[in-house]
Image 1: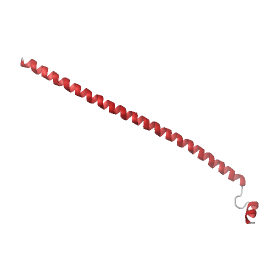
Image 2 (image 1 turned 90 degrees about the vertical axis):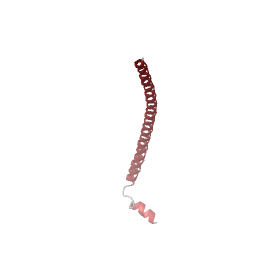
Image 3 (image 1 turned 180 degrees about the vertical axis):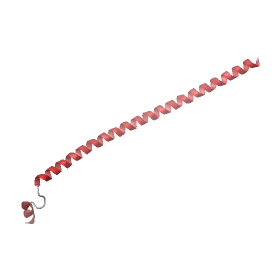
Image 4 (image 1 turned 30 degrees about the vertical axis):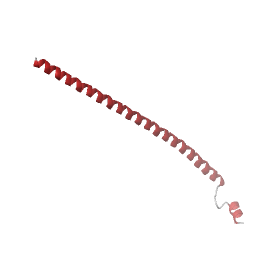
Length: 89
């Protein structure tokens, strides 16, 4: 009996339609938040891919630089030895 009297008098919620509006607004907020979260996740994944590519490029550049410096060092040594031989003559 108490439940019927509350429902008929509307004491628990003054506007029944307002509850549907609130529910719809919450549903839209959840759906919109879900889409924003997916966008954020895709952006984070793209950022991770870019950082990985930069790390790979950096490693390759360091390797090439070390190889070039080693070759240049060998060339400098060869030039010094050739100059020493020429001076010794």
